Length: 257
Image 1: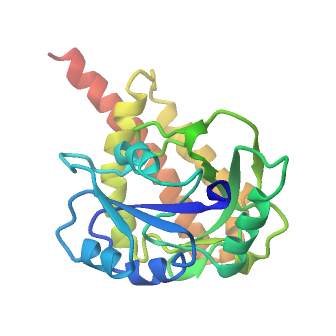
Image 2: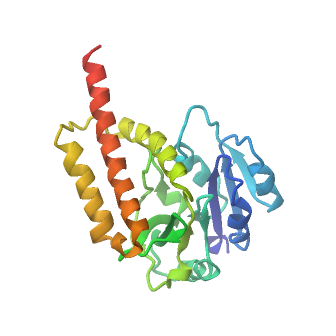
């Protein structure tokens, strides 16, 4: 039955670094759709070697994959879609669990799946998982084109629970601080476009980074990662500072025109 088949959808742009490993872990799903934004490396070649169906979304001047998310999802052949990033690993048990879930008569329309993030060579040891809404029915879902947006699923959504740490999504993003900081500049530019109507003032330069640091380091348990956790929390705080500073900068530029 096609209702019990799952399409894996992966958005890519120059993602060859660990793409073979990613594809190796999803090859047992019913379909792999790679939505490529005109890569200049051998990403597409790798995808085809693993039997993936490749669709192309024009890159233009986009600096994030969200504008291509909805197109990628709608390119899937089957009712159920699992969205995987090109730096994420799907363990075998998680794959099996997803197939078990969609066999249930009362299964929801979407699932939040727990994820572990790697930072400076070590997976996070937070108190709470980083839950991602990545598994859903295609016809119920729209993914907005803005940076860091989440899919909008019409219907009941549940968290996928009772998973061991080794069975959740494993996220290998940003192996070095250079890459973290480099991406932050692009990401915060997109955040400015999304939040440009915010009326942030001077105090926001203090309280927003402070709140993000406290949430990341204390509430989420980043302190359990030692010096890595401290650096991660400081980086999260800096990201918030940069967003606020850029929004204030844009407002000042607009007022001077």
